[in-house]
Image (cartoon, rainbow, N blue to C red; front, top):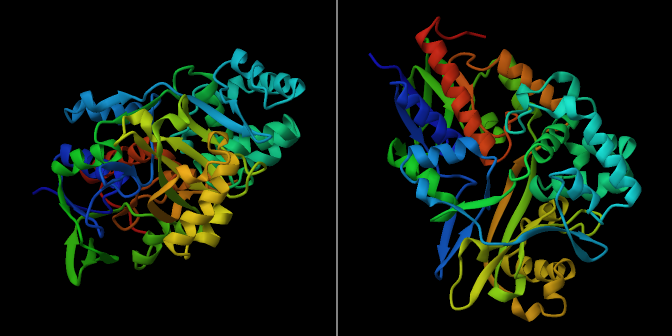
Length: 448
């Protein structure tokens, strides 16, 4: 008889886990409380515009993600974005941002010449540490890299402006929180990605945008949307879940929700599960989209906004590079630093649009003095936008992968398990599926 497995959560981590389990021959059911799949990897349609409400683009380094496109028969959908460059804000102006090679670092004029040399020397010294690191699976990194928070380490070892404009700038743009809340493990792993791959951060999207891959996975699975799971609990050698008032039993359950939601659902978690979930923290953000004339951001793909430059806006992207254009207008997607996002979270849409517009013109030189070009489009609030991979948390999760996953027939799955971004979420789903396949076909579950 096939083992029955429930996957709770139809984000990209849960869908990839379910898909891999189904390929292994298990009977899999996916439960999702929303009316659509994808979670933070979703696209809404409004007035002809496709708005990526969470994850905004893909990069060439996403090997598992691209492999899924080929496997699912949508390889043609993986498309390079239009020509544009990545910038950072420095002294109110835009500066090219690239640390993919020594030569690009030497040309990075946001840093003093002394800091550029120190950064090059740091990358050279760190070569042995960063070679082979996988940013999308931080649990694979040696524990000794989890030595401090990234900001303090960069400030002390490389220089203040590197800490502010490179380390903090990248962290606040792509994680929304300050680099004092990310481990040196993450800093070294990300440095390894950029230093060892000149094309790795080439930006891509899929035809149909971010929802395309989740939707294709869901077509091949038994996914039950609008079905909220309220309880997950061990019961007489099985795992029982309560979904929309109905109790069902499975051989194994994968909890593929956010960590804070998992903490609410798990009844009688093992000690290791409870300790890990109690330590999960998220950065908040809000994604605000405005319509603008296509030509306004010509040549710009994305802009990182270091906290030192503006404590409100963390970054913005030019959606015309995906071919999103209606009647000569495209979208500019804007993201908020965690601190300001928390203050804005409960404000009305009108207040958010108005206040963000006032800050955006300060950090987007092409819009300077032209606020009237921005037309309100759509808003997505994310109270739990990105997990914080802070100092010591990375080590705690690494040890949980070694001893804790599968306790009482329950597995945790999601980007908070040391697996950042879309590629990390897919990596996590595949890892959990592989662990279950080995466990269920081998010696069985572990009680704790």
